[in-house]
Length: 397
Ligand code: ADP
Image (cartoon, rainbow, N blue to C red):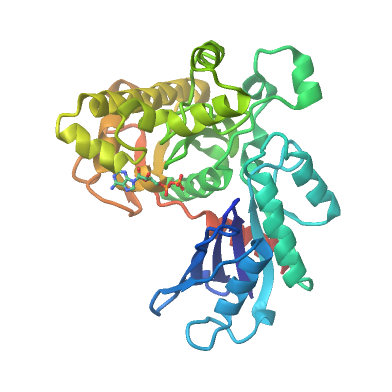
């Protein structure tokens, strides 16, 4: 059976087709600028050359239709007919408190996704658009929702509640949810395999460091805590998001800079983080390069970035009462050799000791810990699409 994985954003659609007989990726691609002039589709069929198509598309349905046309194209397609797609898996960012696992999409599931619009206004509306576009074009197959929040639903109230009047949790569902769950799920399971221990007996700290970044503390197969909260703004310093700050700064800057709520939201999500602090870029590669050329702001931005992560490692080792391994993943975690080294520096008191030579890799699954490190340091490339494909397959086969 072939599974189509879809990740629909406000103006983009990422897709991947996985053959579940051997979990091989038959094709992947990205439709960019959906609904905006200058739409492009980049299609990567396995074993063939990349294809770039330029064609303006009015909406997500037209975007999905183009993906399906490309998938069955005689020249660069990967199947004869759309009927070969057995099921479709959709990445959905917010499942609220209703879903702790992936589900087959029905009217109730769509209602829950809709009910979460007000707490995930940037993500859930386009996710639902993607689902409805696919359902319209593929009405005869089952569609599955895989939620970013689901894996973190094992957190208990002691970790998910904010110290706010309890009514705002009851009335408005203001609590910590956590995101990147599919990635934390995937790499923590791989880590347990690398440890050679049953997952349910491991204490694992996962570091998903991409443009967006979050960490999770996992014990006995359950998420104990994670750094992102009510929204993906909380926690680590990210490409353009501030992560943890004193909330009073929001009111202060709204007044000083004359920002309304929408502008303030934009400010802390898009103008802050490594971009705002360094003044160089949101991309860590550019910041490292600038720091190497003695740019002082780039240097201090990197120190802030490392320190926040180190602080959470300590926090999580305390919450887990120990740790078998820490895991680096996503764009930065998988590729930034120097960043991993700086994060692990001076953590030997906590049992974390890196082997610099073993750490000298990009995008590969390795154990980068020194022989006498009590805590293993793993680098594990994430694979969210594989989790989506597996969940979709197991719920629909
Ligand atoms: P997202 O999915 O959140 O957009 P990714 O996981 O794809 O992010 O990570 C993208 C980020 O990875 C880039 O912004 C860049 O900062 C970082 N990155 C990729 N390669 C390297 C590298 N070699 N060194 C440092 N950072 C890197």
